[in-house]
Length: 193
Figure 1 (tube, rainbow, N blue to C red):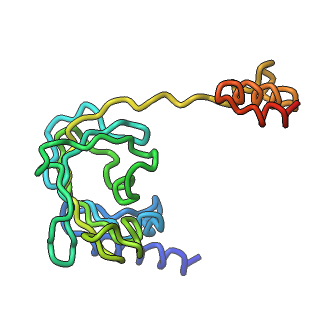
Figure 2: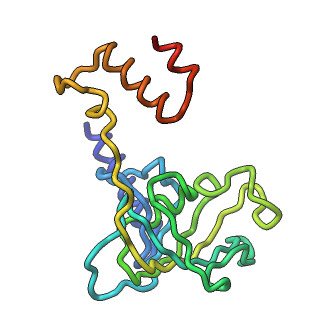
């Protein structure tokens, strides 16, 4: 028991000393590093005084960003230079993991610098000619807007026609028949008969 307390205390201290003022290093509720976000550093560079809404999974975000290599600062992409914000849905796998984690809980107008390890970026494969394998990335980001993302369908309720919170073979067969008709997959219809 005593050993667990010491380990937890040391984990909290390591997180505390790993960050400078204003930076956020992801950690679990017990203070231990979050394996999913290991190495991601979030440095808020501007936070508006008022924040009516914060970004969350499922939201549609409008971002400006400049991406550079941490090793030498060379810029590999910039929506600012193109004068065209980037729109995407957070939490839907449309962007690298460093963004999926590093852009949560942002206010409109907030600016951050994200330092993203290769494991949460493009990994050992890299990306194109400008991002070498194993690269740590830096992104200066600004949240320009937040909109509600598309509503998620409750497929279970759609299949559970009789509403008994159980799926019968007949309900599943009928659902697959309907989907096959919708998507015009004749072979599937034949298999389910």
